Image (cartoon, rainbow, N blue to C red; front, top):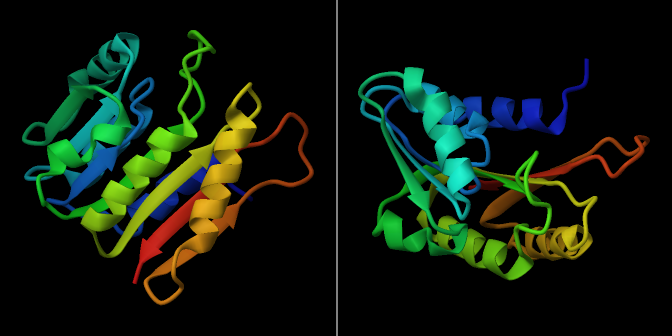
Length: 186
């Protein structure tokens, strides 16, 4: 059975993330990906998660209440464009973005093409060989189409000698089904 973008994103992460890795949730939202990553990296691992909304941070803290002990999960109340300030030269194995807006919240607060691009630039500079960055674009809202076009162009322009890039989307569904991109460092 074909997987949704969210389920496929987790499969793509599971293939490369191992115990003790350092990973990033660039858009923590309600904490689903942050918790998933915490379980993957286990004891000795580290997750840095970012969001600009306090509601996202609180929802994620609640989800993490039962996360594995010994996993360093750092929640940052700041935009993903500031990720480089928190990585301080360290390499990461993976990162994930869910672009759009926080479900069941203010739909005026959205991710933006310029901040997402800045974050991707920083994360690629820190990505280990065979590491992956997953981007799930939800674009059925004002501003979403512009961000999707920016991400498509960004991913298409990545040099083939350094990266493999995958696009995954259901093309016969209504209401703008999310589009998943996976950037893998060679």
